[in-house]
Image (cartoon, rainbow, N blue to C red):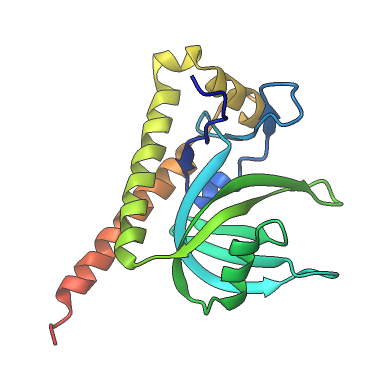
Amino acid sequence: MSGAPTREVARRVFATEFNDAQYTFKESDEERAPVYALLPTGERANRVFVVGTLTETEDVGSDSEYWQGRVVDPSGTFFMYAGQYQPEAASFLREAEPPVYVAVAGKPRTFETDDGEINVSLRPESVTAVDADTRDRWVVETATRTLERIQAVESDEATQNEYVSMAREHYADEEGTLTLDQYRRAALGALEELDEEEAEAEAQPSA
């Protein structure tokens, strides 16, 4: 067996859940051990894969270029940041002309503001322009994955899942209830929005 590290699976997640994934952890004391974001639906994510509309880019750096990109999916907005250590992603954001559909693979990062709020952002490994069909397929797959995770949390087997237990510990309300309805609504709403877009497209007279 090779001793080379393997890349973590990139989780499909909607913005509404990604932005709530404020708890991060390591599973090893090693310095280079991967950092995971804990998704409220009971899964760990070292990497994520998102597709949406790049609506805005801005160089927010002071001493050097540090690009911010806003990517919108049916549920909300992802914020990604790329600087000198992500040259390809930074170059894409510098030259992009929003709005454009993009696919982004990257790592979740958390930052605590001065007032104690935890902001979750994406450090992109790659950013590529994609077409509407790619966006649509991502929405369907991400909705499916989200609903599967919710179903797993609500099943009897969930009590045996350490990440579900962690989600209950860190994201449950004061009564100990882990509420996932908002993520179910986001997934179902994304699928409904997709159906409406397809129906409108079919209703348009052909040229």
